[in-house]
Amino acid sequence: MSMQIAESSLEELWFGLDNPEQLGIKAAQSLAAATAAAKGLRSFPAAAMRAMQLLSNPDASIAEIDKVIGQDPALASQLLRVANSALYRPVTPIGEVRDAVMRLGMKTVHDIVAGVATMGMFQDKKGVGAGFRRHSVGTAAIMRVLTTEWGKASRVPSAFLAGLLHDVGKLLSVQVGEITYDAMPPDALTGADRVHLIERETVGYDHAVLGAHVLDHWRMPEIVVRATAFHHEPGSAFAEDGEVGLYVAILRMADAIDYCLAASESLDEAFVAQLTSGIEAQYAGFDATILSAMWPKLATARSELAGQLGA
Image 1: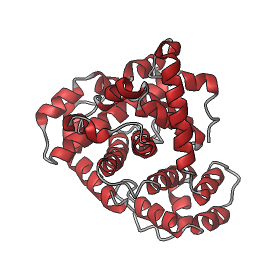
Image 2: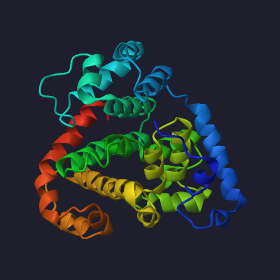
Image 3: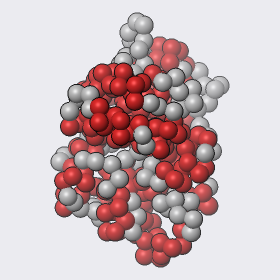
Image 4: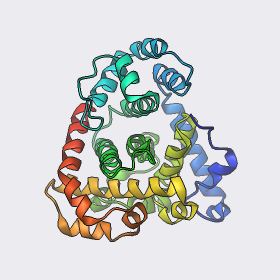
């Protein structure tokens, strides 16, 4: 696992502003309080954390990894479900944790473990929280398909995890209770780039920066933390160029596609045309023809993963 983001870098996660001090003391105090509350509400599962540490160590033995994950039967079961899904397309079924590690690799298994363990912390969510969870799962499936089908998996290896965790700040905010999502306009909750603006007006920070701080505390990969932080500030992400920009571009496309598929799984050519004319698709190199051809796989993968993760 990469080194975690230093405090000075975390300050850059404030909405992508050039001058974070513009937000004022009140907003900083509000975020600090919400972050502390979120950390206190949820401790990351011990078995998953230990497994992630081992999976980040190239010298760790498969037997030791198998033993640690096996200590949490629910975690092992969900790992195998995802490993056997269309997202990873095993030629023959993967029946054991050790097989998953050998066939998918430690990095992939690390991200699956990290993702399913995090989502497992929010299975009790009802109402708006359940909707946020479904959207996260859908975005993860879509982002994985976008990268594999378009030959970008090697450049965006944590696509699944980035998609799954990008809105964890919303799930945490529901628990902290400082933001009342039920009071927001319904159309704001079923589309991209509305909720975070209301959050900022209400409490001075948004779910992206809250999620990034807590994910960093949970020792998630640095690129996932940064993609989470910047997914509503594409200009800042693209200005950094390279890895962060590509992750954010594909994440924002997956985000929008999931909302479209939630309304209807049928191909919406007008939506595809609009999406592929945007800066994200241009940055990542997607075009309408390719995205339209992928549509059935996107819909199938989204539906399948939702069933596997109980979303």
